[in-house]
Image 1 (cartoon, helix red, strand yellow):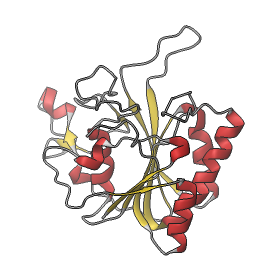
Image 2 (cartoon, rainbow, N blue to C red; image 1 turned 90 degrees about the vertical axis):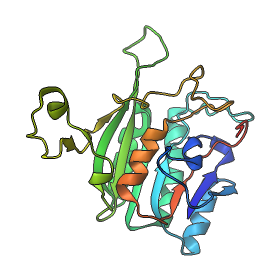
Image 3 (cartoon, helix red, strand yellow; image 1 turned 135 degrees about the vertical axis):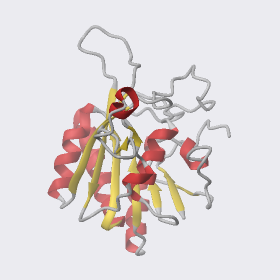
Length: 245
């Protein structure tokens, strides 16, 4: 069963993977959509005893994105307060083995790591999603990444064989020292493979009207590496407005 949540005061997340993970992965369950403020909904779910196996958090970045009725521009102080509020809510639906993944920008990554560790979550991996596209400016180096942070309170589910990639050593030099099969677990910097780039507005893969679409390969890796069939997956931030299916 998969639950997907829409928080109207900060409409953001990739809906594409709710439809299908790839051509080779079939969704057995239709997603359940609950409209409301995720800070309240997650608390209510926790009180009712619902616990997620995976939570994927792709929150607003506080960069002035227009979500048709809500512009997510917040001051640094407001953004930290907002972040701590939804973090306090989402841990209400966690059990010892819940994997919590974040896709977040530089501006809030360190604060999330500090908060989660202070609330007894272990940082399993600090990965980077790198993409070869950025808004041009001359004030500093251009940003071309987000942080893929993986937390768990105790020991997460982990299925490396589902997400292995071809070893560069074996592929390019016929050297099999990485792994006898010629495949290895991916590095913690993602985005160099095909279909991993940022889905820009003029890409043919872009869904009409979608302001923040993530590549399906990104979510496929996250879901496959740490969930079982019929696990409960929660996405607290979901775009529905303007989405044309």
